[in-house]
Image (tube, rainbow, N blue to C red; front, top):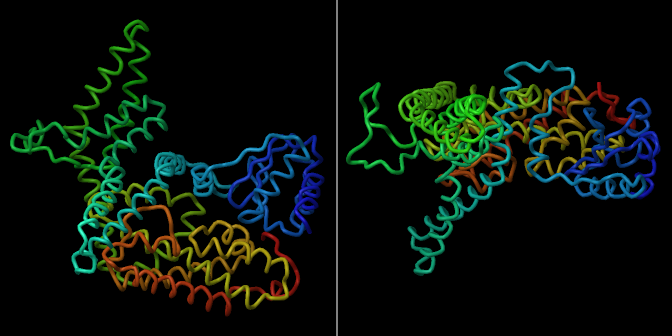
Length: 469
């Protein structure tokens, strides 16, 4: 079926062109907003050749796969004369990571994790770019040390790469402060300053500032990202309350001055030491769990990460990843958790082999598998393993096997957060990328074997399509 015919059918089943308000295309989906949802024939849309699945929310999301979604969205927009919007990668990532089941209750904890996601997700492309550039610089430095690169030009190249990398990681807390202020509806510039305070840039190390409560010298960077989040949140409260009482004629002078002064003193003498204890404690607990639990701890982390994603609990780990990178130079959690997606890939390969007669399912898996290998697991999860039920469980077991292998090898860390799958390989530190690859392969094999043997109902082996349970 050609794209024009697919677009025509979608418009018809959406209740006609007059029922469509807006068409949005992202990397894998066409999102359509309608005037009257009761006019939408979802079952008929699911049966259209080329449609990989549906996700219901504020708008109907039609999973089409990479590339195809943009073409179909454009055609639908032409037919209906409705506005066509293109989502950038930040918007796509944010929506994918914040997605939860529609029936789940929005608890205070979930609202908190959504706030954390809103602060960190816009920084993910920067984490990835700076991390890969830093990885290239490290490889070149190692080659230079080994004598493979002897030209003095390489020294300049390595220096340039490190300057670019440091532009992100050297001032990370400033960016986090700005984003946090935006989310907390405070002045972003003030948030950036609060984030910069913890660097103690104007303090003379030979004559340090003494904490008035502990009588110990202040330490630059103490508390890190966790301290910045707490400080900016408090700053937002102070600023909002000041604006209620300060006269309009003096607001531009008094409000930012008092806000910065009060927040700065609190940050230096209370928040930084307190957040430092929290950050050190969390990292210490994780290190101990991995050290004592070994392969078992790795299995639990790899197997249960996708359920955490479904319930929106994974966002709480983002500040911990960043804190580990700040304190240890790498996050040793991310490679373990990335095994969850690898288990999905192994399960998808098993489906390709065992369900060859199911043309609808084959089309879905073939569209979702390539991006799954690259670390974009959403199509595999929502269009394949979750609808099949048992497949999701066996895929998680595969992820657990990969996590166990990674934990057993030990000390496999990533220099940045964001990607997973094979896309994470360039970010693995200390030349341990081969250990990460072994973990990936183990998860592929585990997901494949368990899914092939136990994860596919008989009905999916025939040409019965695929419907959400």
